[in-house]
Amino acid sequence: MPAAAPPPQPVLSKGGLRIYPLGGFDQVGRNCCVIDVDGDLYIIDLGLQFPDEDMLGIDYLIPDMTSLKGRENRIKAVLFTHAHLDHIGAVQHLLPQLHYPPSYGTKLTIAFVKKRLDEERLTSQAKLNVVPYGQKIRIGKVEVEYLRVTHSIPDSAAIVLHTPYGKIVHTGDFKFDLTPAGDEPPADFQRLAELGKEGVLAIIADSTNATKPGFSKSESEISATLEDLIRDAKGRVIISTFSSLLNRIQQVVEHAKTYNRKVFISGRSMETNTEIAQNLGYLKAPRGLIRKVGPGMDKVPDREALIITTGSQGEEAAGLARMGLGTHRHIEVKKGDTVILSSNPIIGNERAVAKVINNLHLRGAIVKTNQELALHVTGHGHRGDILLMHRLVRARHIIPEHGEPHMRAAHADIAKSIGYPDNQIHLLSNGEILEFERNGAARKSKHKLTVQDVIIDGRGSAGEGQRVLLDRKIMSESGVVMVILRAYSESKRLVGDPDVLSRGLIYGSEQQTITAEVIHASKKAYEEAVNRGETDRKALKRAVTGALYRYFDRALDREPMVIPIIVEV
Image (cartoon, rainbow, N blue to C red):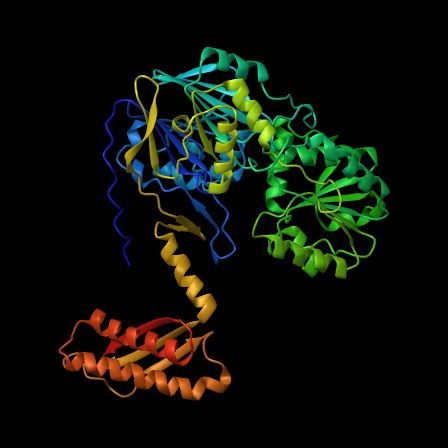
């Protein structure tokens, strides 16, 4: 079936400064924000969003670029803040769609972008540029400046756009960690304060933890807990965390070295990310300390083995879940193993994580989580961090981003607490347009861009994400029934009784009675439609579908998916 035509988008004049998010302003993930300077477009991040629990079978969602169609030649740059997938994960889908505009980021970020493009053999067409911190780069009418911030992955950046209308600061994901892990420097406080003195028109700032009081903890604060567990473990240590938490992985590697343990890496993304980080010098380890899991690891005594694996969110196909089920190719969890989950479950993943923990316990492992020990810290600033950012930058306008509506509302409350009036705090939704006037005032446009869910399911994508998800939800809750009707092509009269196939709908004890009633209801609805003079196949199908919906609602109190098929003979 051909895809539906994209909805019409408002025509925007080329003059002036506008900001419009295409993702990340109604959810955590799918980050993408457009800065429009006299019609020249600067896109910040092309991220993915992992599916919610009810998004059955969906791999992830990506930003909808329909509003930029026909304006690809106006895209001056794609600017990446850091290498997490919710900021770069859609590059292999969207850079080709956008005709490969020049892309910029710090060294590690561009290496991760390149890896995603390599997997689809797209790198040769991309224009990837590494940007050093603290230097202004002229791109069209705008000078772009990358500033160091701390997050849970090295080389994270805030981005400053020096436009003819004023400075725009995009914080990226940030917290103020004064004692970062490893050799990573803290955020560039001095430059942020200088920008505040120079004058900033607007700041687009992370809202993820705006509801949480105080300052977020330093990554170094969990180091002692990890060290104690590694030191005291009598057998193997298995640590599960996000594969992009390179700062965490560096700490684990350092403790493994201290206590004479070899480090084995499990999981494709974990192997890929540690390899890239080692090659670029962001993950430091003596030669031979870090290895891939394999048959040879059994020769290493349990007391000298440490495994870092994916699966901290309970993903069924990831390493930790397979260990818990006993289906991992190389690792069988046993009594004496210490399993450490160095993460917090993302909202919606709690049940999946609990299932993995239970399976590990059943196999005799000692399981440690962040609920009982300090094993994870966030990469996003709490209220204190956000407040400090605004005190440093002192922007005229505050635009809370990166978060669900309640997070951004909490961010707006922070801004109000330090004296910002309502007309200088802008709670945008995806597709809304913030327009700036020459005098520096800003207001929402009466126009809004249409932004749909674009889902990635296997290797394909579809703009009509909600329709696909609704169909799967219906089938998961009430099953599906197919009614096959054979009819003469000329008269449209039925040939015999319809055939009925169902899945996930009818219990064995109901089978004979309900099937007979479905045949009767569908046959009656079809013949009545033909008697009314209907000959259009779609109209005949609608008649059957409506009758069966009414039957299932009345007889079974269910709403299955009904698929009528008419075969002409």
